[in-house]
Image (spheres, protein in one colour):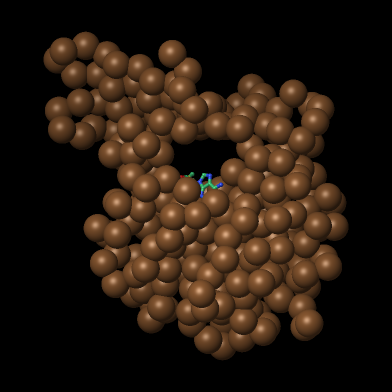
Length: 250
Ligand SMILES: C[S@@+](CC[C@H](N)C(=O)[O-])C[C@H]1O[C@@H](n2cnc3c(N)ncnc32)[C@H](O)[C@@H]1O
C-alpha cells in the first residue's frame, strides 16, 4: 500500500536509520561558516522542518540558541528527546510566526519543497522574512525541477535490532506543473520475513530561476554549490544547490 508521510508519523522511529549515512555535522558546520561570512553576527536559530533534530543538536553544540519547527508531532517528540535544551513548535512552515525573531533560519534535506505549491512557498518566504532579525540569514537546499531524472534513485541498507533495512528514495517529476513527488520505500527483513512500506510525498516543483525570482524581493540571494566541504558558487548547471539568503533592509 502507498501511504503519504507515514515516515513522519507511524514510521518516525525509522527516520534516523534511513538517514544514518547523512553527515549532519558537515552540513551544520558549513552553514555555521556561512553564518559567520554572511550573517549578522548573532546566534539565535530556527530549523524549519527540523525532523528529529540532528542539525539542532550540532547548532546547540556550536553555541546557538536553537529551536525547531515541524508539522508532525512524532518527529518533534524525537527532536525534543535529542535536544532537551531547544524549544520546538508544531506549525506549518508555509505560514508560521515566531514570538521572537531569530538571526539564522535553516531548512535542510530539500525540506523546503514540502511547501507543496508555489503559493505555499511564497507564504513560507514571507514568514521567514518576518521571522528574521535585521541582516539575518536564511539557508536551504533545493532541486531544480528541470534537472530531475525519474530513473535515478538513492538506495542504502543497514542493520538494526536483528533486522536488515533497505531504504530507497527517488524524485519524480512529470515534466509539467508545479508538483513533484518524493517516493520512498522501506524493506525490513528478519527471521519473521520481509515487511515493505512505500511512502509518497507531494512537493513543490520549481526551477532555480523561479526560485530566485520569489526570493529576490526579500533577500540578497547567493546560490552556492551543493557542497558542504567547501563554499563555492553554483556552476549554473548542477541540479541541486544551496541558497544563502540575507534579509534585505525594510
Ligand atoms: C526529510 S525530513 C527532514 C528532517 C530534517 N531537517 C533532516 O535533515 O533530517 C522532512 C521533515 O519535514 C517535515 N514537514 C513536512 N511538511 C512540513 C510543513 N509543511 N511544515 C513543517 N514541516 C514539514 C516532516 O514532518 C519531516 O520532519
